[in-house]
Image (cartoon, rainbow, N blue to C red; front, top):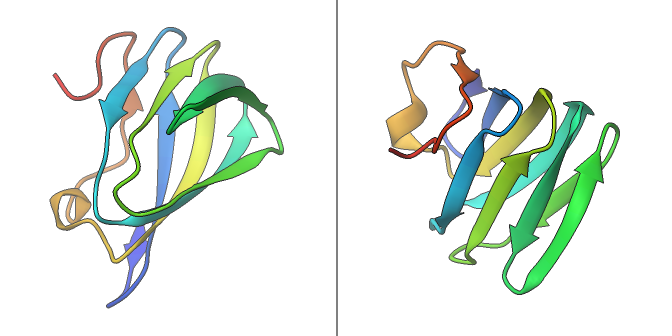
Length: 99
């Protein structure tokens, strides 16, 4: 992870079946799938995003992800997410990420 005053770049590894439940935040988010695939829901739109695919989440729009297989993504947040600062990279197990 790296961050500055206005941008944060992170790496997430989702194990198969891992879920980031429907949530929203004030940060804009851009994500690129490095490997694997997951179902992404942004607002009322749901689609599968695969290796090489990307998506954008505007500020305060509800969204979720569910890994269909082990998936690695690079996610950028603006402004940086304070709660992620100081965290080490870790794999997200096959359970609800926010629990």
